[in-house]
Amino acid sequence: MSAIAQSQKFKELGNDAFLKSDYKSALQHYSSAIICDSQNSILFSNRARAYKQLLQYQEAYQDAQKAIELDNNNIKAHLISGQILAQMGKSEKGIKQINKAIQDMTKALTLCAGQNKQVFEKDLNKYILRAKKLLYFKNIEIEQENIKKEIDYLKTLLNQQNMNQKQANEIIQKAEECYQKNAKKIKNEVPDHLCCPITMNLYEDPVITQYGFSYERQALLEHFKLNGDIDPIARKPINRNIPLISNLSLKKVVSEFLQNEPWAYEHYLDQNSIEKIEF
Image (tube, rainbow, N blue to C red):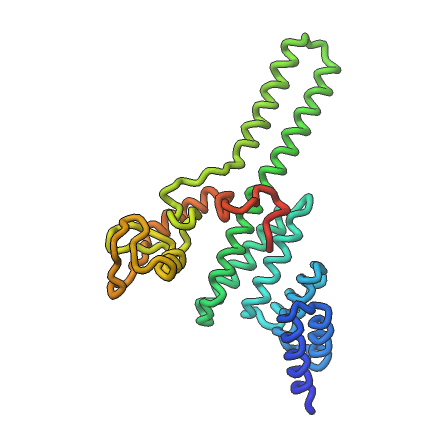
């Protein structure tokens, strides 16, 4: 059996193990495959996925970078690289890593169109929006830390100066008001008109029925299965021969809203903290 054939065999074993969530075995099989064929980009991106599941982020990132080095058009490699960077960006000084994560995953999204692999676009958009949300919270966290340091510095400085208590309190109060104002950037209210009335979540793929009401496409189709061809709000029969029309203008409004308010993505999840955002 040729080295390439052996490599393919180990790759298939690795894929089977990965599907069974046996990531250690998958890692071993992918490593064996790489020994047989060290120039195969897909093998490195597959092993990177296994490392990621085992929380071995440095090894996962190194394999993702090797996969990109071998084939810059490897969509999964760019995605994994971005996911790992975003995960590592949760650490104390992670702004650069998060920005690079967004860059890598955006590169993967661009490659999808050129390779006609739109099947990856939904996941890529999800992780890009999560990374932007993470960046938003990370910036607030850093700003809060800096303001707190300034407040502590002011208190120390004031204690060393011949300043009356009233003046000192006014300066500290202004600094603390700045701290509270920054904290209010963490919001939790999303405009109702941007949310599907069925799911109560932000629209991703909104469609319009013949009665002029908009719903999330998949949610509406599920509604039809459970309740028949009835418009959820109008409570009137829907002619399924008339195709659902994508509400592109509403989709654009939601996209623009998320650009300005990245915290709002997946707002229905308890993700208003850095550690809870999953990659």
